[in-house]
Length: 65
Image (cartoon, rainbow, N blue to C red; front, side):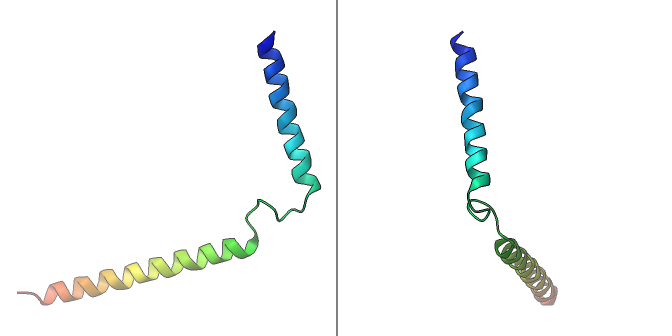
């Protein structure tokens, strides 16, 4: 019987959290578009730097005897 009450309490707690999240501003606790854009720009910059660095190392290593 205690397991049923614990499960019901847990589910009610989840429902309360979701209701509170809906009632509050949608920006709290969520990834905003600005952060997604910043992450994408950082990923693209890191990928480009990796490619440039790889190509530079490859071309310099080809010059070694």
